[in-house]
Length: 373
Image 1: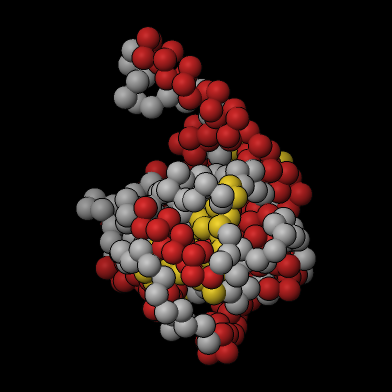
Image 2: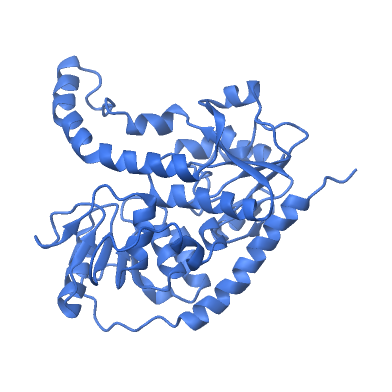
């Protein structure tokens, strides 16, 4: 089949890039021709604009100039190498459409031709972000002849905002098949009179061996603890520092945080391939990242996951850990590691095998789906 997917693939986030790659790779392995629709709306691209200004400072030219003087040099030094690393990954591993689209109207005026359109995965339907309210991510643009389906699309939360139920139901009513990533997604669908099935994140469609083939090897020599914290949570820094003291292992961080010991290693420009290698070769992973958790599980690593403090996106992590019997790996406010019990990956992998088989069967189903006459 000729398949096109749509997802938030170009947001300089490890999980977003890798889940986009995984779905395409699996579908290609099934023998299909697959492209990712290069959809780049302003609300996503402007977040990474060198000259973007916080709304608090944009109304005054003097404040705007002062903001630029402070922010632009820091962005050039900090963000440019990292963005270049992601851009290389996108060029090498993500097959994008020849045209870049910026609005749903552009998609409608030049409809990407496909036998099957797939929305997902990741938080494309999260109503707290603009993409969750964008009809493009609900395949509003698709040709009537194209089969419309979602794969592991995530609402990222446990309820819809008041007023969104009606438009989202209208958009989803045009789908032939719906699957979501979390159990809470099924609850949301049920609340608006829709139905779907739950499947695993696309990252699980590929094995550890397959991921290992594109992972960078030995970016760090020796054993280490990897910390990946989006919020500079002092509890995560304290927990990681305590674990380091208990195990004698050094700390490697992907996001800088002054709370860590001075001797820790900070890597600013890791590519998605580096991210895979850093997880695969670590002894422990401490994160508040959903995909940090996902790849820790894929590589059968010892890990601990913290909930987010400032974003209501924890349902995706709690749901995944509960499915796999790993509820004890979700840490709340602890700052000390305490007694560490190794994960029984025989039990975890047994559950994963069944769940992944179910997810692959769903993808096979939508690839073979034909509308009733």
